[in-house]
Image 1 (cartoon, helix red, strand yellow):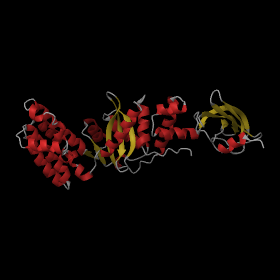
Image 2: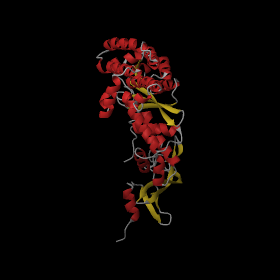
Image 3: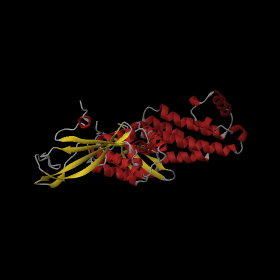
Image 4: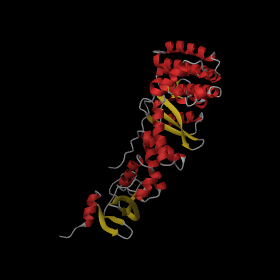
Length: 407
């Protein structure tokens, strides 16, 4: 019994009449498999635009697609693609079931998209022996199509943060639906115009910007300006971790200044003051206990820091938080510690946004987690050739998009 290779490959490719596998050629020298597809004589097809059926074939165009590898060999599909004559739409190439319009089959594209979630595109390009620019075009097309279809209509609370796209001063700003932990918008830069860009995205999707009731952000003047100009009705919550970070920076500035006079006491103590007491090891705890009994400026700054943390830990509502924050501010502004006094003035300038936390309970913790994943992917890829690729990867990692991949 003769083995019918063409029929076997037709079954594997799920080929339906009137299409069939006409010929299969294997080039061992090049390491390539070529599958030639044809259609039965007298076949008629649909118009690719209006789906009008039973249309005659006007002529054919030879087209080629890269398909999934056959074992370790590159595989290609070749098809004498018909063009139909439609009374309304004139002469058109028919829709091919395995193609999305690129030089790859849908299954090959699905493989690329699956691999791109867990490995750099440059590595995928080497694996499949294709130019990475072509693969990026596939990825960006799927991302853009999925973004167009994505439903952001329920978004109310938004987190905003910048992340570095390259070394130096190249940034993108990420917008996250805080209820779904989902990236919904990414744009170049970190200035006030990024907020306007987000508003434009909402308008394009016919989402009323006034449904955005809460923002969570750091104390970036640019973000504050952008939100006040474009979303003046929204409550802005300053991220509590950013507030504590600024307090830690003030504390460390006090330590560095005092170290010039108390080097023997304060040498190698930086992390003792910055870590929470419960996170110190035994020797660090002993050293802290010793230093706390001394009349040091750093010790006073440390107590002010702990007092600020107590507000976040113990205030049950905004009213209690404001009472505690007023007491803290009075202590900090009179501390005679210049870095602490400077930070206290910053708190005063951002008073409402800091207290808004006790109503919204929003933090940028979700964004920090996303940023960590994004930077890990960036480092694994050793950076991205351009910002467009970087933005596509952010959506791929954290956009929770339905990419509608072939199966």
